[in-house]
Length: 136
Image (tube, rainbow, N blue to C red):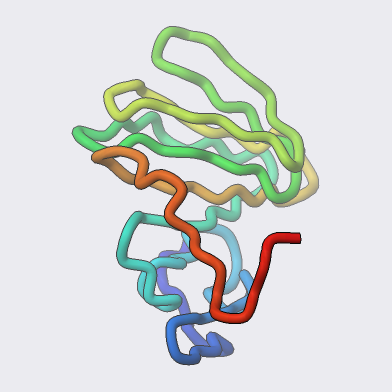
């Protein structure tokens, strides 16, 4: 599985950046999102799993993770032996010390999921209306 994002196609402006998953690498493996897009507040990667592929089990010392299935079907197995199947739009939260592994349930199609990791709590609702905007 590859681990080298190309970074080509990332567009940046004053306080923003956009890209397509294909801009961040090719083939199966990690598509690093954080560095190419300039994210600093949390970790985030997209992972492309080949058909039938299962990741190794892992856990974290500090960061919890949220997984979002973009395409395909994956099974996530937890350290207690529980297994949950997720389809596109499926979400799973996993605490830092909990062991987890992902498996692509298809023998013919890739699966893509996004993993977001962070620690130290929720910021809260800090959004403000831009000048000239009003609640609708």
